[in-house]
Length: 317
Ligand SMILES: NC(=O)CC[C@H](N)C(=O)O
Image 1 (cartoon, protein in one colour):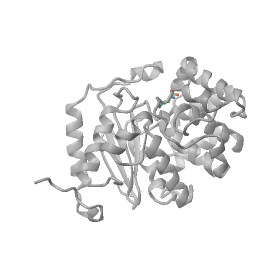
Image 2: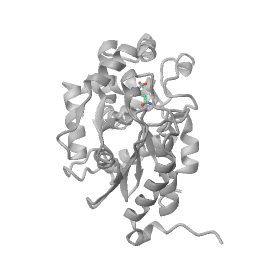
Image 3: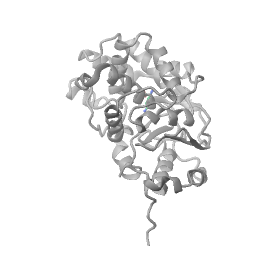
């Protein structure tokens, strides 16, 4: 007979450290699968045989395994935080400049932009993230400093920093993002200088954090918008619900359907191999393994999240 997953109400009975240990063993047996992102030259140097996972519970406890304290480039995971900041600043008016529909296209695709007159499909594709970066730049003085402070506050780690070498590497090789930003500008959907928007975007992607930092940093999305580290309301309960829903439909790009099917949690990936996810009212979590699948999501990270939701019963479905 099929073994039923535990009911989330019985969370206290789950041995989360034991579950993480099992996942860690399973993942390490598969080391070597996937390909490290090499279109940003500096990211190509990251070794593939790494795996970390961290769970940040709402009461402050953290469970972690493997390389959960090794820092990596957060890349597109940063789009969750700039979306939060842009929504706080612009409110619902943000949705006149970027949509909230799934794309079915790769994260760096330009194809819909002309047909849809410079309005990106969602804030998690690069095109949409350039628009949210523009909104952040328009609404906050010294946006780079503000974002760094925001990430330090969310993670409770004052050591969080930016990898300037990765930012420079992307600035020198980001031809597609340059094309995209100029194209959006031609529809008047960027209001700041194009180079300033790109520089801020590369800077946000080049933040370096570890799994524990990132699990803590998405905890506000599990806790009705409240940041445990500072007690601040980062967003409202409604805001957190909305951001989670956009993560569900677009956080893993054209694999979002597959993620809903196999994982069943709002999640956001980055080409550095990290994926953050949210179990509403229970925890923020993060996995990291640098080998990517063909859609640009961490291959073993996705597997680990799949195993996790199946072993705990903690999918939103
Ligand atoms: N999916 C990602 O993580 C992409 C982010 C990367 N900085 C880019 O613009 O291509």
